[in-house]
Amino acid sequence: MRKVVKFGGSSLASAEQFKKVGAIIRADKERKFVVPSAPGKRSSDDTKVTDMLYGCYALAEQGKDFKKELKAIQDRYQEIIDGLELKLSLENEFQTIEKMFREKAGVNYAASRGEYLNGIIMADYLGYEFIDAAEVILFKEDGEYDAETTNRNLRQRLEGVEAAVIPGFYGAYADKTVKTFSRGGSDITGSIVARAIKANVYENWTDVSGFLIADPRIIYKPEGIETITYKELRELAYMGASVLHEDAIFPVRSEGIPINIRNTNAPEDNGTWIVESTCQKPKYVITGIAGKKGFCAVNIEKDMMNSEIGFGRKVLQAFEENGISFEHVPSGIDTMTVFVHQDEFMHKEQQVVSGIHRLADPDSIDIEGDFALIAVVGRGMKSTRGTAGRIFSALAHANVNVKMIDQGSSELNIIIGVANADFETAIKAIYDIFVLSQI
Ligand code: ASP
Image (cartoon, rainbow, N blue to C red):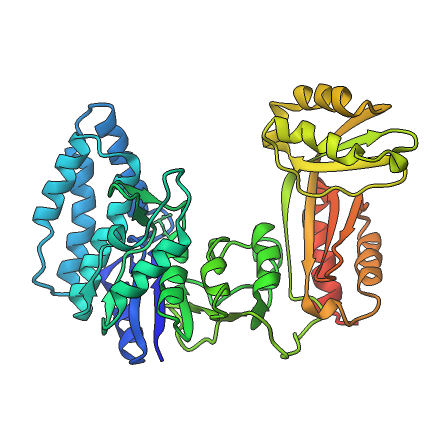
C-alpha cells in the first residue's frame, strides 16, 4: 500500500512548516511519494516564492538587473535549509538559474524553479530520491498535458523506486523545454503520480481541514464536508470552491483512487474524502453550496422557436465563432437564454448579437448583466423529495428574486441565477434551511 502525499505552499513556507511535514510523513510508512509546492506565504502579508520568481523573471526579460530579487529568493530557501540544519547547498542551482534567466529561458522555466528547489530540499531532508518533474511529466506540442505518455513513462520510472520526491506544478515538452500547469497545479502533479503508482490514496495536505459546505467569507464557521464524490466536487469546484485545483481529480478518477484533503497544521483532523462513489449518507441533503458572480444572460426570442430545427445550434454558433463558451442554456417555447461570463463576453457582445441575427434570425435579443450563479450540490438530493421547494421558499423568505433555475437530469445539482447583489443573502438562506434549521 502506497500513498502519494502532496503538500501545498503554506505547508512548506518555512523550516517550521517543513518540520511538521516531516513528522506527518514519518508518522506513516506508506507515505512514500511526496509532491511539494514552492514555499508559500509565511504570513498574510508575505509573498509566495512563485510570485517572487515571476517578478524576478519579468525584470530579466526586460534586460533589467534582477540580482537583488534573485538573492531574496535564495534567502528564502537558505532560511529553510538552515532551519532544518541540512548540509545542502543550492549555490550551483542559483548560478544556473541566474544564467538561464539571462538567456531568457522563459517564464514557465522561471516559475517552475520554486517547486524544483523545494523538491531538492525535501528529498535531502527526508532521504528520498529526487526525480525532476521535467523528466517524467510530459506536455504535447499544443501545450496540453500528455496524460497517457506521462502515465506510461512515470509508471516505468517509478518501478522499483522505494521513496521519491517529485516537484509539483511543471513538466516539459518533448524537447525538454519546461512547461507549468496553471496556478495551483501541484495538485495535478500529485494526482498524476498517484495514478501512475496506483496509490491507495492521494493525500493532499493544505492549510484547511478539507472542504466546507459553504464559503467561510459568506457563512460564519460553516461545517466541513466529510465525504464528497468526484462528480459533486467537480460541480462545486467549477463554481468556485477552491481548495483543490479543478483539474486535479481527472488522473485519480480514472483509477478510482480517493483523495483525502488534510490540514498540515491540524493533522489529527480527518479532512475531506473525495471518492468515486459511496453508500455513506451525507449528513445533510445537500453536500455543498458554491457560486460565482459576474455572469451575463443573453435572452433570445423568436416565435415558434421550438419547432425550428437547428435554432439552438445556430445561436450557439455565434458564441463559438467569437470564442466564447457558454455556461447554461435554459429555454422556453419561444425563448432561449445563454449564460456567459460577463468579463469574457463584454468585449465581444456586439459581434455575438449581430452573429445571432445573421445565423438564427431571431425576433429580438436582450442582454442582462450582473448575474450570480449558485450551485446547490448533493448526491442526497436524488432520493429526497422537496429539495427544490425548500430552496425556493427559503429564497422567497429572504426576499431574493430567482431569475433562473437549471436542474441537471442527474439530480446532483440545482443551479440558481440571482442578481449579483443578492448573492450572499441567497447563499445564507440556502445554508440556513439545509444545515442550520434542517427542517
Ligand atoms: N507554486 C505554484 C503556485 O503558486 C503551484 C502550486 O502551488 O501548486 O501556483
